[in-house]
Amino acid sequence: MTDRLKISIKKLYDLFAKYQGLSKLQGSPLYDDLETWNKHLRSKKLRELTDEDLSLFAGKVILTWGDENDYRFFLPRILELTAELKTPYDIWTLYSRLEDANWKTWNADEQTVINDFTIELWNNLLTDNSKKAEWEFKDYFHSISYFYPDFSEILKVWETNDSFASIKHLTNYIFEERQHLFDNNYIDSIEKNTKNIEQFKTWLTSDNILKKIENAFYDNEKSEIAERLSWVEQILKNEKKYST
Image (cartoon, rainbow, N blue to C red; front, side, top):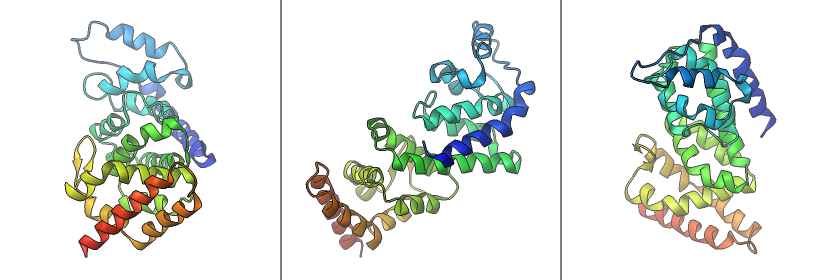
């Protein structure tokens, strides 16, 4: 985990700690196990809660269990686990629940610290060369690109990240998602994301990205990723040709 991401997580804990006394964890009267669920969440310190401990809460919060203050209190731990690629429930639900909680009406400093975390999460993911990051990359990218307010910044961070993991993620993503992106014209997330597709395709077929792929091929010509890099370079050149 990058130092910047660690700092952003600490800021989350510092800022949202004030909601501990406001968190009451009330829920639907239809839940027979609600008291047990509440006791379980309160049985550990916040930073000791695991993704399994928080999974049920993360899925039901705002909708039928817990209110905005409850979500605020547990949010730093949910986001910290997300940074460790162990997000409770799933990352799309995490950001969906923020929308359900009307988080864009929260205090400006709270909105800022969440957005700062998200961009640092994205940068950290791009530098993560683990198998886990490779498996989770698409879901994380789709959620971040859909919910983060500035898609241009997402692309800028990707373009300026020169790590091997970043180019690997880019290569795998284009190779696997070509049909959705260029034939069907959407980013294939939980919802078919069309709001950023034209900007994304223009960026993918830009000279800068083509050069990035080409340079990566020559730098890794003898590695197992070389063939896929070659395929992706040809895909992007063809799409650029057809679009002009």
